[in-house]
Length: 323
Image 1 (tube, helix red, strand yellow):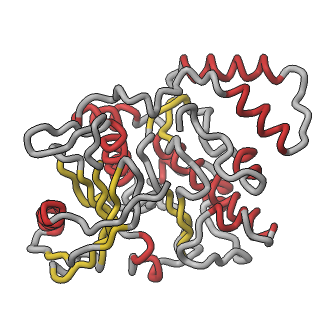
Image 2 (cartoon, one colour):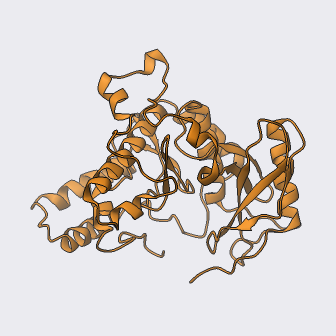
Protein backbone atom coordinates (compact mmCIF):
# COMPACT_ATOMS: atom_id res chain seq x y z
CA UNK A 1 0.00 0.00 0.00
CA UNK A 2 1.43 3.36 -1.00
CA UNK A 3 1.96 6.21 1.39
CA UNK A 4 0.22 9.55 1.04
CA UNK A 5 2.85 12.12 0.14
CA UNK A 6 2.85 15.32 2.12
CA UNK A 7 5.14 18.28 2.42
CA UNK A 8 7.55 18.16 5.34
CA UNK A 9 6.58 20.17 8.39
CA UNK A 10 8.18 23.48 9.25
CA UNK A 11 9.68 21.80 12.31
CA UNK A 12 11.40 19.27 10.03
CA UNK A 13 12.77 22.06 7.85
CA UNK A 14 13.97 24.11 10.82
CA UNK A 15 15.68 21.09 12.40
CA UNK A 16 17.38 20.13 9.14
CA UNK A 17 18.59 23.71 8.59
CA UNK A 18 20.05 23.79 12.09
CA UNK A 19 21.91 20.50 11.62
CA UNK A 20 23.31 21.58 8.26
CA UNK A 21 24.33 24.96 9.65
CA UNK A 22 26.30 23.20 12.39
CA UNK A 23 27.90 20.78 9.93
CA UNK A 24 28.96 23.29 7.27
CA UNK A 25 29.82 26.16 9.57
CA UNK A 26 27.44 28.74 8.17
CA UNK A 27 23.77 29.59 7.87
CA UNK A 28 21.90 27.11 5.62
CA UNK A 29 18.42 27.71 4.24
CA UNK A 30 16.28 25.06 2.54
CA UNK A 31 13.27 25.13 0.24
CA UNK A 32 9.89 23.59 1.14
CA UNK A 33 11.09 20.12 0.22
CA UNK A 34 9.66 17.18 -1.71
CA UNK A 35 8.27 14.00 -0.15
CA UNK A 36 10.07 11.04 -1.75
CA UNK A 37 7.57 8.55 -0.35
CA UNK A 38 9.58 6.76 2.31
CA UNK A 39 7.60 4.02 4.03
CA UNK A 40 4.95 3.55 6.64
CA UNK A 41 7.70 3.78 9.24
CA UNK A 42 9.68 6.77 8.00
CA UNK A 43 9.38 9.89 5.91
CA UNK A 44 12.08 10.68 3.36
CA UNK A 45 12.40 14.19 1.88
CA UNK A 46 14.64 15.96 -0.60
CA UNK A 47 15.45 19.61 0.02
CA UNK A 48 17.21 22.06 -2.27
CA UNK A 49 19.73 24.26 -0.51
CA UNK A 50 18.68 27.84 -1.21
CA UNK A 51 21.69 29.41 0.48
CA UNK A 52 24.66 28.33 2.54
CA UNK A 53 28.46 28.12 2.76
CA UNK A 54 30.44 27.09 -0.33
CA UNK A 55 30.93 23.61 1.11
CA UNK A 56 27.19 23.00 1.44
CA UNK A 57 25.63 20.63 -1.13
CA UNK A 58 23.05 21.65 -3.72
CA UNK A 59 20.47 19.38 -2.11
CA UNK A 60 20.09 17.09 0.87
CA UNK A 61 18.03 14.08 1.96
CA UNK A 62 16.26 14.13 5.32
CA UNK A 63 14.78 11.02 6.93
CA UNK A 64 12.77 10.76 10.12
CA UNK A 65 10.46 8.24 11.79
CA UNK A 66 6.76 8.68 11.28
CA UNK A 67 4.57 9.03 14.37
CA UNK A 68 2.63 5.81 14.98
CA UNK A 69 0.85 4.16 17.87
CA UNK A 70 3.74 1.71 18.23
CA UNK A 71 6.37 4.44 17.85
CA UNK A 72 4.95 7.80 18.97
CA UNK A 73 7.00 10.87 18.18
CA UNK A 74 6.26 14.27 19.57
CA UNK A 75 7.75 17.12 21.60
CA UNK A 76 6.39 15.64 24.86
CA UNK A 77 6.70 11.91 24.12
CA UNK A 78 9.43 10.90 21.73
CA UNK A 79 10.35 7.27 21.19
CA UNK A 80 12.92 6.97 18.44
CA UNK A 81 12.94 3.46 16.91
CA UNK A 82 16.18 1.51 17.03
CA UNK A 83 16.36 1.16 13.24
CA UNK A 84 16.62 4.97 12.93
CA UNK A 85 19.56 5.00 15.31
CA UNK A 86 21.10 2.04 13.46
CA UNK A 87 21.14 4.06 10.26
CA UNK A 88 22.56 7.12 12.02
CA UNK A 89 25.34 5.03 13.58
CA UNK A 90 26.04 3.15 10.35
CA UNK A 91 26.46 6.25 8.19
CA UNK A 92 28.58 7.99 10.81
CA UNK A 93 30.72 4.85 11.19
CA UNK A 94 31.32 4.50 7.45
CA UNK A 95 32.33 8.16 7.18
CA UNK A 96 34.75 7.55 10.05
CA UNK A 97 36.46 4.42 8.71
CA UNK A 98 36.43 5.33 5.01
CA UNK A 99 36.45 9.12 4.56
CA UNK A 100 37.86 8.81 1.02
CA UNK A 101 35.88 5.75 -0.09
CA UNK A 102 32.16 6.40 0.20
CA UNK A 103 30.04 3.25 0.51
CA UNK A 104 26.79 5.03 1.35
CA UNK A 105 25.57 8.61 1.50
CA UNK A 106 27.65 11.04 3.54
CA UNK A 107 26.18 11.71 6.97
CA UNK A 108 25.45 15.39 7.68
CA UNK A 109 23.94 15.18 11.16
CA UNK A 110 21.06 14.02 13.32
CA UNK A 111 18.77 15.04 16.17
CA UNK A 112 18.46 12.38 18.85
CA UNK A 113 15.13 13.57 20.29
CA UNK A 114 13.19 13.19 17.03
CA UNK A 115 15.43 10.71 15.21
CA UNK A 116 15.75 13.05 12.23
CA UNK A 117 18.92 12.50 10.17
CA UNK A 118 20.29 14.43 7.19
CA UNK A 119 22.60 12.93 4.61
CA UNK A 120 23.94 13.24 1.07
CA UNK A 121 21.55 13.30 -1.88
CA UNK A 122 23.21 10.70 -4.11
CA UNK A 123 20.83 11.17 -7.02
CA UNK A 124 21.76 14.83 -7.40
CA UNK A 125 25.25 15.01 -5.89
CA UNK A 126 27.53 17.13 -8.10
CA UNK A 127 30.53 15.15 -6.86
CA UNK A 128 29.28 12.12 -8.76
CA UNK A 129 30.21 13.65 -12.08
CA UNK A 130 33.58 14.88 -10.86
CA UNK A 131 35.01 11.59 -9.68
CA UNK A 132 36.53 9.22 -12.20
CA UNK A 133 34.75 5.93 -12.66
CA UNK A 134 38.02 4.03 -12.46
CA UNK A 135 39.00 5.59 -9.15
CA UNK A 136 40.36 2.90 -6.85
CA UNK A 137 39.77 2.61 -3.15
CA UNK A 138 42.11 4.79 -1.08
CA UNK A 139 43.49 2.88 1.90
CA UNK A 140 46.39 3.46 4.25
CA UNK A 141 49.47 1.56 2.98
CA UNK A 142 49.40 -0.86 5.91
CA UNK A 143 45.83 -1.81 5.08
CA UNK A 144 46.35 -2.61 1.40
CA UNK A 145 45.93 -6.38 0.94
CA UNK A 146 46.85 -7.61 -2.56
CA UNK A 147 46.77 -6.21 -6.06
CA UNK A 148 43.51 -8.05 -6.71
CA UNK A 149 41.91 -6.00 -3.93
CA UNK A 150 42.68 -2.77 -5.76
CA UNK A 151 41.72 -4.28 -9.09
CA UNK A 152 38.31 -5.29 -7.77
CA UNK A 153 37.70 -1.74 -6.55
CA UNK A 154 37.68 -0.47 -10.13
CA UNK A 155 34.73 -0.50 -12.49
CA UNK A 156 34.93 -2.45 -15.71
CA UNK A 157 35.36 -0.21 -18.75
CA UNK A 158 32.52 -2.19 -20.35
CA UNK A 159 30.08 -1.14 -17.64
CA UNK A 160 28.82 2.46 -17.72
CA UNK A 161 25.42 2.53 -15.98
CA UNK A 162 23.14 5.51 -16.07
CA UNK A 163 23.23 7.55 -12.89
CA UNK A 164 20.29 6.66 -10.69
CA UNK A 165 19.89 3.03 -11.74
CA UNK A 166 19.62 0.38 -9.04
CA UNK A 167 20.52 -3.30 -9.05
CA UNK A 168 16.89 -4.34 -9.47
CA UNK A 169 16.75 -2.32 -12.69
CA UNK A 170 19.58 -4.42 -14.11
CA UNK A 171 18.20 -7.74 -12.83
CA UNK A 172 14.76 -7.10 -14.32
CA UNK A 173 16.14 -5.80 -17.63
CA UNK A 174 17.04 -7.84 -20.70
CA UNK A 175 20.82 -7.33 -20.75
CA UNK A 176 22.50 -10.26 -18.94
CA UNK A 177 26.01 -8.80 -19.35
CA UNK A 178 25.03 -5.53 -17.66
CA UNK A 179 23.27 -7.50 -14.91
CA UNK A 180 26.44 -9.53 -14.34
CA UNK A 181 28.61 -6.41 -14.13
CA UNK A 182 26.09 -4.82 -11.74
CA UNK A 183 26.07 -7.88 -9.48
CA UNK A 184 29.87 -8.04 -9.42
CA UNK A 185 30.18 -4.36 -8.49
CA UNK A 186 27.47 -4.80 -5.87
CA UNK A 187 29.21 -7.76 -4.25
CA UNK A 188 32.64 -6.11 -4.46
CA UNK A 189 31.37 -3.01 -2.66
CA UNK A 190 30.05 -5.13 0.19
CA UNK A 191 33.32 -7.04 0.36
CA UNK A 192 35.43 -3.87 0.50
CA UNK A 193 33.17 -2.37 3.14
CA UNK A 194 33.53 -5.46 5.29
CA UNK A 195 37.30 -5.55 4.81
CA UNK A 196 37.70 -1.93 5.91
CA UNK A 197 35.57 -2.48 9.00
CA UNK A 198 37.42 -5.54 10.33
CA UNK A 199 38.99 -4.78 13.68
CA UNK A 200 36.91 -1.64 14.16
CA UNK A 201 33.80 -3.14 15.75
CA UNK A 202 34.48 -1.25 18.98
CA UNK A 203 34.19 2.05 17.09
CA UNK A 204 30.77 1.10 15.75
CA UNK A 205 29.66 -0.06 19.19
CA UNK A 206 30.69 3.27 20.75
CA UNK A 207 28.75 5.27 18.17
CA UNK A 208 25.65 3.08 18.36
CA UNK A 209 25.56 2.81 22.14
CA UNK A 210 25.97 6.56 22.52
CA UNK A 211 22.63 6.93 20.74
CA UNK A 212 20.67 4.57 22.97
CA UNK A 213 19.27 1.05 23.07
CA UNK A 214 20.34 -1.34 20.32
CA UNK A 215 17.11 -3.34 20.21
CA UNK A 216 13.47 -2.42 19.89
CA UNK A 217 10.22 -4.06 20.96
CA UNK A 218 8.48 -3.88 17.58
CA UNK A 219 10.06 -7.13 16.38
CA UNK A 220 10.74 -5.76 12.90
CA UNK A 221 14.28 -7.05 13.05
CA UNK A 222 13.44 -9.99 15.28
CA UNK A 223 14.86 -12.59 12.92
CA UNK A 224 18.23 -12.91 14.61
CA UNK A 225 17.66 -16.56 15.56
CA UNK A 226 18.04 -17.20 11.81
CA UNK A 227 15.52 -20.04 11.80
CA UNK A 228 14.43 -18.79 8.38
CA UNK A 229 17.75 -19.70 6.71
CA UNK A 230 16.83 -23.23 5.58
CA UNK A 231 13.27 -22.45 4.40
CA UNK A 232 14.51 -19.39 2.49
CA UNK A 233 17.26 -21.28 0.70
CA UNK A 234 14.99 -24.18 -0.20
CA UNK A 235 12.39 -21.77 -1.56
CA UNK A 236 15.04 -20.07 -3.68
CA UNK A 237 16.37 -23.39 -4.96
CA UNK A 238 12.86 -24.56 -5.87
CA UNK A 239 12.11 -21.39 -7.83
CA UNK A 240 15.39 -21.73 -9.73
CA UNK A 241 14.86 -25.48 -10.30
CA UNK A 242 18.06 -26.29 -8.39
CA UNK A 243 18.38 -29.46 -6.32
CA UNK A 244 20.33 -28.67 -3.12
CA UNK A 245 23.12 -31.01 -2.05
CA UNK A 246 22.11 -33.66 0.46
CA UNK A 247 24.24 -32.09 3.20
CA UNK A 248 22.85 -28.58 2.78
CA UNK A 249 20.69 -28.63 5.92
CA UNK A 250 23.64 -29.65 8.07
CA UNK A 251 25.74 -26.86 6.56
CA UNK A 252 22.97 -24.36 7.21
CA UNK A 253 22.82 -25.48 10.83
CA UNK A 254 26.58 -24.91 11.10
CA UNK A 255 26.16 -21.50 9.46
CA UNK A 256 23.45 -20.54 11.92
CA UNK A 257 25.70 -21.58 14.80
CA UNK A 258 28.52 -19.43 13.41
CA UNK A 259 26.19 -16.44 13.13
CA UNK A 260 24.85 -16.81 16.66
CA UNK A 261 28.32 -17.31 18.11
CA UNK A 262 30.64 -15.00 16.14
CA UNK A 263 34.37 -15.25 16.58
CA UNK A 264 36.67 -12.21 17.02
CA UNK A 265 36.88 -11.77 13.24
CA UNK A 266 34.07 -9.23 13.08
CA UNK A 267 32.95 -6.97 10.22
CA UNK A 268 30.20 -4.44 9.45
CA UNK A 269 27.34 -5.32 7.08
CA UNK A 270 24.40 -3.38 5.65
CA UNK A 271 22.13 -6.32 6.53
CA UNK A 272 19.29 -5.26 4.22
CA UNK A 273 21.03 -5.54 0.87
CA UNK A 274 17.91 -5.70 -1.29
CA UNK A 275 18.48 -4.99 -5.01
CA UNK A 276 16.73 -1.63 -4.65
CA UNK A 277 18.90 -0.52 -1.72
CA UNK A 278 21.75 0.78 -3.83
CA UNK A 279 22.42 3.39 -6.49
CA UNK A 280 24.91 3.28 -9.36
CA UNK A 281 26.79 6.53 -10.00
CA UNK A 282 29.67 7.49 -12.33
CA UNK A 283 32.06 7.04 -9.39
CA UNK A 284 30.74 3.61 -8.46
CA UNK A 285 27.95 1.98 -6.56
CA UNK A 286 26.64 3.51 -3.33
CA UNK A 287 24.59 1.54 -0.82
CA UNK A 288 21.31 2.81 0.65
CA UNK A 289 19.24 2.00 3.73
CA UNK A 290 21.37 1.07 6.73
CA UNK A 291 18.49 0.67 9.17
CA UNK A 292 19.78 -2.83 9.94
CA UNK A 293 23.49 -2.01 9.89
CA UNK A 294 25.38 -4.21 12.32
CA UNK A 295 28.61 -6.03 13.17
CA UNK A 296 28.72 -9.77 12.43
CA UNK A 297 31.23 -12.59 12.05
CA UNK A 298 33.58 -11.54 9.26
CA UNK A 299 33.11 -14.63 7.11
CA UNK A 300 29.45 -13.83 6.62
CA UNK A 301 27.80 -11.48 4.18
CA UNK A 302 24.29 -10.28 3.50
CA UNK A 303 24.80 -9.91 -0.26
CA UNK A 304 22.81 -13.09 -1.02
CA UNK A 305 23.86 -13.53 -4.64
CA UNK A 306 21.52 -16.45 -5.18
CA UNK A 307 18.61 -14.45 -3.80
CA UNK A 308 19.43 -11.49 -6.06
CA UNK A 309 19.56 -13.75 -9.09
CA UNK A 310 16.15 -15.06 -8.09
CA UNK A 311 14.86 -11.48 -8.08
CA UNK A 312 14.23 -11.84 -11.81
CA UNK A 313 11.62 -14.48 -10.97
CA UNK A 314 10.17 -13.19 -7.73
CA UNK A 315 11.00 -9.60 -6.61
CA UNK A 316 11.78 -9.38 -2.90
CA UNK A 317 11.49 -13.18 -2.51
CA UNK A 318 13.22 -13.66 0.82
CA UNK A 319 11.40 -11.15 2.95
CA UNK A 320 11.72 -11.55 6.69
CA UNK A 321 8.91 -13.12 8.69
CA UNK A 322 6.37 -10.46 9.52
CA UNK A 323 7.36 -8.08 6.69
